[in-house]
Length: 265
Image 1 (cartoon, rainbow, N blue to C red):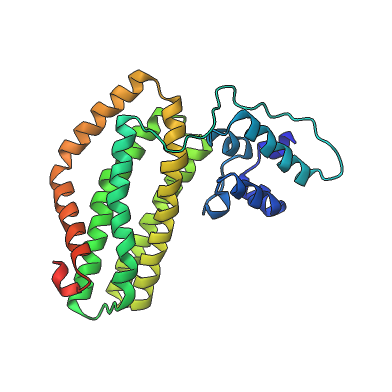
Image 2: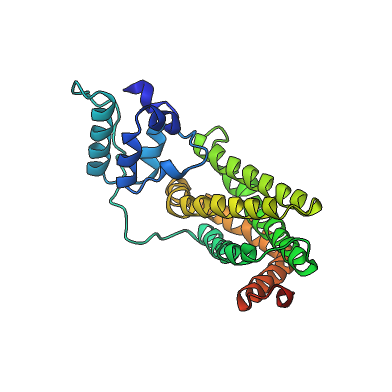
């Protein structure tokens, strides 16, 4: 069993598809993750299951891997694990990141509206796509993702698979943005649409996993001193990006107020 606990979750699910359904039953959505390099043992521990649920989950996984025999558990449930709360309470710096997610999700929600009648040969449609890309690059990436990559994630081991997964998501998102701009240059309407949707699907799952899994796990492993330090550093970044935040939040408001591209600006 030890070799599977130290194996990437996607590889485990590929070998034993039934394990994906088991994890889904515990609200551990590894089947939707686009990377899946987290180790099985990490996947279990970071979700803060109760000791009973951890034991039950591992017993079910073991029965799939070794259906013909009973396996002695080599996995020790987390001693500080507690039942999952009905609602998550975040530390102040983490709550700030969650609030920024709310702004980003508002734009993600509008992408299907943007592409519904999109024609990149029209000036107004091109302008709207460029404004959306500007939001992604300046607010979602340079402001929000940079707080994660340059500050928050550096409080943890850079070799931690879970941190690598979320950094990889950021890189894939930047690839979608690059492809959107390339599509505009080529007047490739279909490519622009596909990569806008690709970005939306990626970030939707990414944000959900951060809000429900990564941030709570990090909060449980940060000291009071670290939380205070993060709050101070995040406040400095907020000041530096005040103009960007105001500009992009105003863009989101305009975007939601109308479905007519020519009125968005």
